[in-house]
Length: 233
Image (cartoon, rainbow, N blue to C red; front, side, top):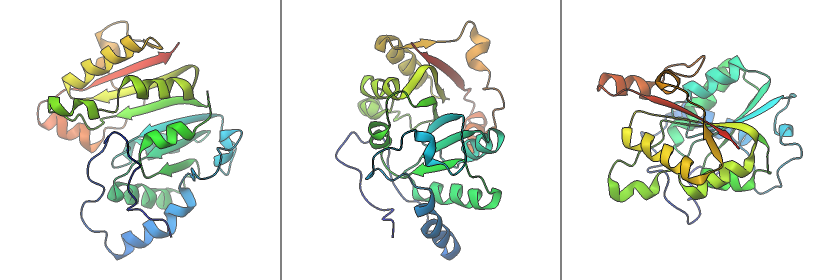
C-alpha cells in the first residue's frame, strides 16, 4: 500500500496542505489502485535511459511540477503521445483527479510523483528532460513567505542539471510579483535565456494551451497572465 500521507523530508516548504475534502469511496479506491501503477519509485536508481519509465517508446521527456487539477497535463499527454510526461503533485485530491482521467482516457505516457518535487529532481539523471513546466505555482503572496517560492537559485540549478542543452523551462503565473521574481532569478542564475522578443511573446498563451480552472479564476478576478519561456544555455 502506498502511503499517500507520508511527510516530505526536511526541506523548504514549497507546498501547503496535502488534503482537501475527504475522498469518497470510489475516489479512494481509484487512488489506491492506480497510484502504485504510475508512481515513480525513487528508492530504485533512475532507469537508463529514463524513457524506460514508460511502457511504450517515447521521443521526448517533459516534467510538470504542481499539475493541480491535471487539465494541462492530460491535455498535453493526449496531444503529444510520443512524449513521456512526469507530473508532480503532493495534493491528494488533485492526484486522484488525474489518475481518474488517465483511467478514462487510457493515456499511457504519464508517470507521477506525489511528494516534494526537489526529491524527484535530485533523483533524475543529468540532461534527461526536454522541458520543465511550472504553471501557476503557489505564489506565497506574503513577502515573508517569498523564500518558499519554488523558483530559487537552488532549484534553477536543479533545473539546469536535468534539462538537455537548449531545453525549455516554461513558467506561467497571474501574480506580477512572481513573474518579476522569476525573470530576476533566471537572469541572475545565468544558465537560462529568456526567449521573448516582444510583449506578445510573453502575454500570449503557449501554442495549444488549454485554459485551466486556475487561469479562469484569475481572469474573473481581473488578473492577466504571463507565459515565460526560458532556454537552457
